[in-house]
Image (cartoon, rainbow, N blue to C red):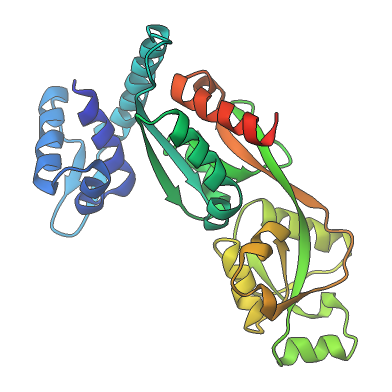
Length: 294
């Protein structure tokens, strides 16, 4: 089977949309459709249910996802074993991170990697940092920038890029929240904006439990950047990493409350252990160590 077809199949299996998948694969939708049809002829059955409104994996398609991932992983392992170390690195690297990370950590790292490995095709996707580790575990990305959880899965490796204190922020704009604070109301009586998933949500809940209060949640949001935005509009308080606050265009519209028991988070690269020794992943890991240390 053509490895390129297998790669494109996995993209379609993730997006379940021929238009979006073809854009990511840099082929036309009809070309992608022909590639999928060819795979279906080779396996002897339909990999997708598709009509005018939706695309879904069949039972055979779901099973074929595992086969495709395993085949591509084995092929990469074989190429690594046969690699001519004097030759330049070639291939693709997929990196996932938050928008904030592109400013604070990734820019210098990607610049250094590109300068050293000019023939590697680098793909960068941004999104909610709470999804970073899941995307790595599901082979949707090679490396992700993630907040280190309290317990890291045994099949993952973590390379620290930095540490950020957590801050409790409040709105500066005149609003009921700000007025309650001026009146001396304790923070546990006010509403909070909370990350809908991930380490930051877990850390906030642990902090509230330690202070022995059940928080009133105004809204759950995806992504750390939205926390600062909603607080600046007066909707509530929020716990955010200082690195997110520093990069936010709304940082002057919020104030940091004097809370000393929030701790910090570690931010770094995450990859599957079995992938860290692959040539391209290893090269990116090495660039990280040169910039940020081990």
